[in-house]
Length: 516
Image (cartoon, rainbow, N blue to C red; front, side):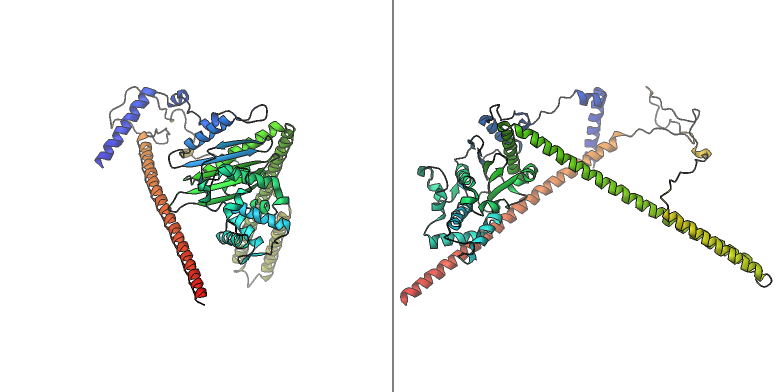
């Protein structure tokens, strides 16, 4: 405790010394240099006057963005491929680096079966390893279903004698030499996936029915659509692959078609960058780039977009005004009902009191003056009826404007202090000794200046609490990550055991067949 008191005393002394030397803290704040803006906000727009984009500025922006979000260090990788259909330009960022694709080959696999549907060789009701083709494609593209992927891969091998690696190559406009051994070990590059997505975009629903339809429903609030600007403006067809929390590297990939007036394709692959907001931020930047390029290519659309934005703003304002008016009306009705209830209660109380008084007055004379009691009772009933009629009239009439009664003279104790009794605090260059300050006279007011010590104590406690919360958060994140790794390892272990069991059963069946 003594050490804490010493530390607080030292901090207080430092603050007091700084305050004495600085003088006016407000002036110091105004004279202090402003904090430098992040590089991502100071870089110029990569869109050029001729409607093309500067590739070097895009590279600088991505490097700066990863630095600002603390993901540009060894072990973390991001590869990007971007294609703008308006000028047929492409931009790549480490796009030829092979990363594990998890189950990303589901897209070319679905494209292959979509062509089978188009040619009539198969229908949506065709059964592929126990499920219909329509169910397999929809659940695989929208929810990344593992069983559906297994059904299509197994059917491809049984029906066509092909592997998914044989299928994917035919949808990428790349030479055979590009497909190294890493490709056959379940790895993809951003360039490869962008080429596959480009083939899908150019073929459209005519060549690949139902694929884009299901991709537009995939992950409605996640991956690239985490950016609200992307989610609310144009349609986005996307598909992803993810594997994190296991023993190996965390892998999160996504490829998407932005259906802006002039569409574009963006493919992002990440390794050990498990923050989805980082991927969403990069996607939002390229989405804005696509819109800027579109306006450069077609300036006439600027007026249309401005008019649509103005109409949307006006509609939002009208809705807000309507909501405010409805709330005001509801509040007015509530106030009127409350006042009417209070008036009814007051009238009922007054009537009961009058009836009680009349009864008390007429009871002694009940034996000798019966006619007088009857007259008094009749007058009371008439008064009650009149009061009831006034209450009903009050309910039917509009809400009156209630004017508060005139303010009465204040008591002497609450009177406004006069110049003779008001305390005027004057700064003094000499501080009186302790215990010699005069007490304030009764009925006077003064300004009590707060000491900075409690404020410093509160700030110190807040800093300690923040530090404790940060430590607890780090511990929680580590435990959660470890839990995910263990869960993924258990799933993989069960999957291996199941595969081994199935392999063992197959070998046993084969041996039985050979013996027979």
